[in-house]
Image 1 (cartoon, helix red, strand yellow):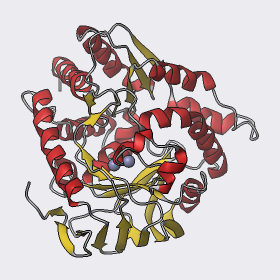
Image 2 (cartoon, rainbow, N blue to C red):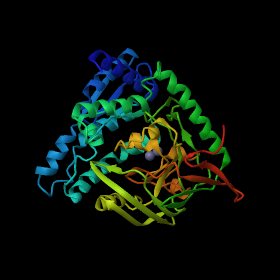
Image 3 (cartoon, rainbow, N blue to C red):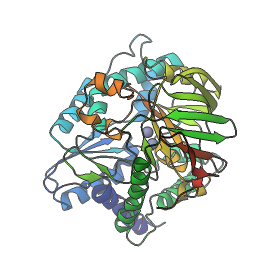
Image 4 (spheres, rainbow, N blue to C red):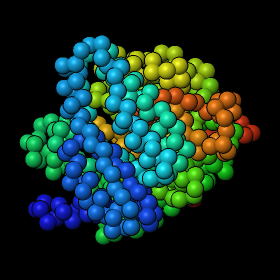
Length: 415
Ligand code: ZN
Ligand code: ZN
């Protein structure tokens, strides 16, 4: 790709984030949370697109993941509860004002490899705790927000360890172009139509009022109970004020919230889970009464334990999502080591926080009401993949009858 082609690509990517991901409104401010300095070219292009679409102000908060590594390697061992609260304050204030938020990441999945898991865990907990008020606003879609992950050099090297650096970056860009449909003549138009389709599938599933889903695949035999009034959401998201947007680009999933106390059985992950710069691989979880009662990981067992110990509700599920096996992301057959892409390759579950908009009336409920209705609240929300081309999913109807939802990883019904 020459410079001109790359500039055109970034322009398309930025336009997609502004028009589809954020659906930025005339006059609305935009807050960009940039997780790496390496994403600067896209940040600048997004700012341009935002202003051209009438944004009054674009603010950028720059992070540098490498500084977090420097801290883990060098800072006093007892200092990891310290947190730069001004960063979360800035984002919180911006969200309170109703600004749209774009989160631009693309981090090295194993940046913290070999670091003391206890310190990594402490830093992650301090981060989650300070993010709690923000998570609450995000969870009820107080304003538009979107996550995009452009390739970065470290991330590309981690995905393609056997390629020369330049080739690795080129390959990762190719994968991102395909999955974000940036190769379509008009990506904005493409996603408009595609999200409309996914939404119809969600409406179909919601109307079925399943009481549970049963998942079967090698290593997985799991029943996930669904609460009354659960809503399947997919494609478009909607703010409290009624503005449509797309929180993830790309996104292929239709998802709802499980009943907090009604998951039973064992699930085996089909892709690694990347957690704050660490990798957990070949793991399985066993649930009883909704709670993880046993867990095993061939790699990253201590990190997995850290996640489960984040708070008392981290051992319960907050999301169950369906993604057909035939999407471009899974057809690439690539493990991106990045949840944004990997979660859209496969059926997945999330430990921790449930989204209130997945429950009828959920955004207006008190904490007690939401919990009583079966919703889980936690400082974490960690997606992990367990779908494959070998997975069958049944829906259990209110009268107890089972019907196919997916067979061999593909939808078993037409809409
Ligand atoms: Zn999901
Ligand atoms: Zn999720």
